[in-house]
Image 1 (cartoon, rainbow, N blue to C red):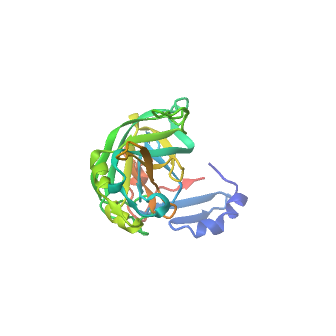
Image 2 (image 1 turned 90 degrees about the horizontal axis):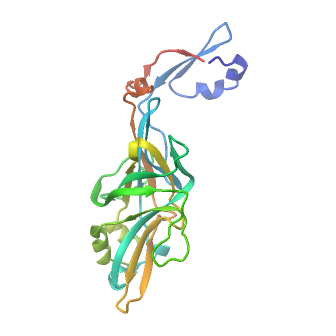
Length: 276
């Protein structure tokens, strides 16, 4: 579309400093932009409170699929002896929804059966891991299954008399529980040596759904349910710490979409000129 020259002039300082873009001012008062694609992803996602989880595909923008990498923290950042608490009954990964709730092609539908996979990380998340193209090698898989995402309805657990806030729940495999049960940790550093973090990835049904999750919610973390030798039951929370590291990875596939030409462009390739 054509933009009046006055409005374009107001943006010239900003546009001139943006790499890969040349401005051609024509006598007819129309500004023409020659843009180029750079194979560099500068989307920084580190330390965000809110992420999206799922996959989405359409004919215009192609397909995206997200994964969340996060470190884990001991409750109150203090040491803990899991071997001394009794017997761990289960460990449940919970992700509370953000204000986004969810997004789907059919906006009248807010739920979806998502296939979610959770894996342990082989390496700690350091300060260099902060962009959407970053990733970290994974170790054992501690959850894989179909989970109903429903941000509109609360969750009632066995023994509860009231609803908890809407959230995703995933019961982790015995590999995680068994390793945790044997652990004695004097501090957070000891714990991180054994549990470097987790990767959470999801694929929505028909690639049509994204769920917003809040990593800082009191309802987000790994809830460890246990009972002691006297039969008393308790809960310990492994959280996504305030100072812990986390980022969101985004896989993109432009095949068959309107953006295919951009996705296949080489660094510094000049694309077809467009008049706006």
